[in-house]
Length: 297
Length: 296
Image (cartoon, rainbow over the protein chains, first blue to last red):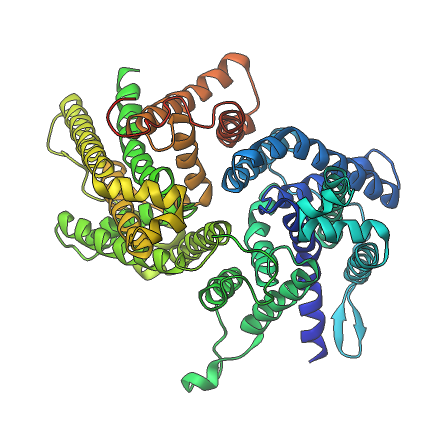
């Protein structure tokens, strides 16, 4: 049972940071930025490259997050602000195109081989019967700290109040003297940093390759959509739901149902579970489990 | 060299059909379908299934059209009360689910190995003539589908689609059934994509899950956006343009002695950059939509 909880937590942490980042920007610019999963890959690759160049891991990670945050703002100002004037659908396509360009650049720059952070590979610890590695613990702690800080900023600071005001009604916020463009860019920067941290957190637990962005796209979207796009705390719950679904389906022995001793859900289908959960939920709750303020046809 | 270009033109014709099918949905209907490759896959695997069951090849076309129709209806049903971006991601998910099923259900689909040895089109003809006949068939098909799409989009249905795309609430208030429109356009586009997939499978005599990755959908998106949204001639031009550019990438690589990863990176890079450049500077594509029917 504890092992199950540990597995769920590890998987949820994989998705949570990027899903929260996705929801955070969605609430302000009202299109899902698909390129965010590639920002995570960019963050991981930058941290790996800088660590290989001799920087300590902590410094390399911090610089990588800062660079990705800056890149996210530049892309937002150069590309998305213009295209959003035409329509949210075009911005969605543009973010997809940007993701393709980023992954192509990284394919040429780093090759198709998976890359690793230089962290010691340790044996799994045994905590009350659950097997978990120290790197997984670091990754969980890092994610929780990052999301905790983000939640504090969002709910306890003047900046957070401006962010929530802009998300709820941008025109009204502008009328009350909030510089909505500045607030949007700050949130875009935060989302870039969170996504990069998500990528680094994954690199901490294993290798990262160029396909990673594409593989993560749907589970991350499933988590964000389940939580109701634009609701960043909902995204956290969405990540947990997806993690529970994936872990349950691969760990339960369905054998007794068919009168056999053992029948496990084929592991090859594990990735489809999150997509299936997404489609099933959307059939019944078209705006995710937690309905947010989004209302467009 | 000449044979190579005939081959590229045949592929361009097949992608032209796909671009036309997607254009019906996104260009005219405004439906952000990110799962078009799944409908194309119905066509490919319909052909493969008929081959494995040793039925006549044309039965494959029947299977393809039927399965694509059902899948398109499901996608349309899913779109009934979803926001555009939610639906886009849902269609992407369904395409991925389909690819994973096809990869794993080895007894039906050959798994990752795929199905090979499908009867080639005009396999009896001697070498140069067979290829010409194939080109003529594909060109004929794409022209026929082009004519069909032109008639369809110039008709009252086309007009209704444009109203749905621009002002969905106005369209409902005028008495148009948006769900019925969505179903019609999804199924029509789906069947065209399945026909393209069927001929693709018989042209290559091979069907495999590698052709079903979602990047392929974005490739078709690139053709539609670069060629010209909601312009049937434009998207065909886009399909030919992109195919010809992609065919030249390996020569470019050899000429400048670039690394091998360059070739596999060039495709997503060029499509991504093309989409972005056009969205920013020329959102209507090379050939813009003609507004208002006949001549403006």
